[in-house]
Image (cartoon, rainbow, N blue to C red; front, side, top):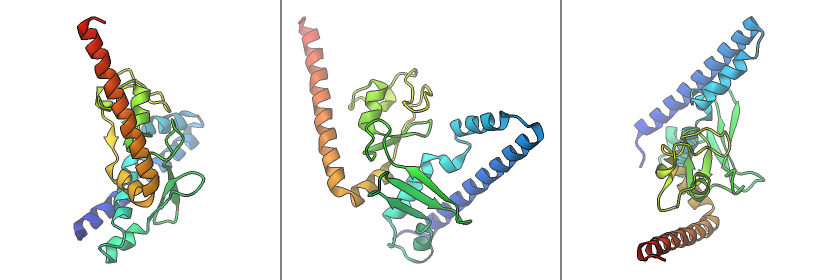
Length: 216
């Protein structure tokens, strides 16, 4: 049973990010109208990179996954709020959709830009982009068992090319649970493949260390 305070906090978060985004867009529109320049677009890009454009934050995906995971359990206000989120994992591109109070719909892609498949064991880099853990580790040149936090500060996001985005990567636990529940066969297949790759990397690493230690 999910307590009411969680529902209220979730609603407050959506309302906050919506007002924040609308205010920013109005300010930028006014700025461009007054200055007749491209500075507004440049400023917007900078804000998105710094996560001030909160409607594009991966935390909203995680919040949506949280509500969808518990949809129908609590009933009442909680279930009603769940209806603002939907998730289509069977379409051409897997997406999560957030429907705002003004009926505006925002879509969040759940495709990993590296393997081009639905994200598995997903991590959000500090720049906001989502990847499978295995794909992110490969892009950062670190082994699976080492983890993303061991990545070099010079390692860049494969999409936006921002550096230093791996050490504060966030494991999207609710999204992973949502994928496990709704795409269980796919999730199990990817889990087996990731485990096999992790074992392979670990074995190769320790074999190389042993050979180095004994002088081969």
